[in-house]
Image (tube, rainbow, N blue to C red; front, top):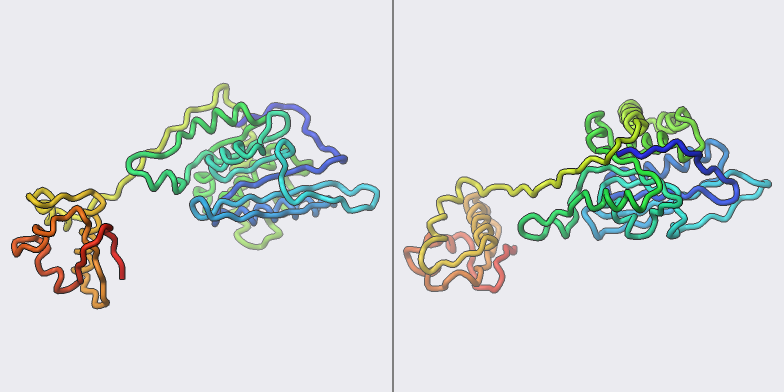
Length: 315
């Protein structure tokens, strides 16, 4: 899956080398961006970075952008603050769907762009909020990248980072060094990590492991990625006590309402003393919920119950 054809890289002095980093909150995208800027400046190049934070997906999808250019005529260049479609040389994606996002934005083009991405998944809100399995098919992104990108380096960098007690930014930095898209030596990359002074040993181990894997010859055919299924946490054992209530005449429970009532009973059993209101789902028959034989009898002594069209817990 590591598409590394031995073709000359473009190291021009007429236009900057443009690097986009697609990351999420907590993955070290800002550190990676700083490393790239420090690397360029350590070699005497001009470099500039900008970031566009977002909070729409997971813990916040963010775009970092770096432009770098060697000095020319003793004058500082004017660099762009935003990536332009068709002008990005390298895209680093910290997760597979982030790679897909860069393709949708037009940052990955077959004439210019090297796409470096991790193939692991962190689910988006749209995938997690739907009942059942709403996870996106990872092979769709892999197939799109095969068409949209000039070169592609992709493997599970999260697994490499975890195995070395590091973070994915170090793996992306190692894959970037192995790609040959920047005119700097591997030793200069490692020197930047060493100069940071924090987590040097683990970051270097992750960097080297990712560099080695990214430098491997490309496979004859891109492997098919397995679509991970959703895992549902089972109800606690105490919930089975009230299972008969769901099947009783007069009770019409949805799965969501049932789970909310189980949570309410867990609150009661925990012995909380602060006021807590449990809104009764509309699906519960008022007649069934007020009879003395109801399994909910006595709960209102500990928590207030009021009818509602919802079914949520509010304090």
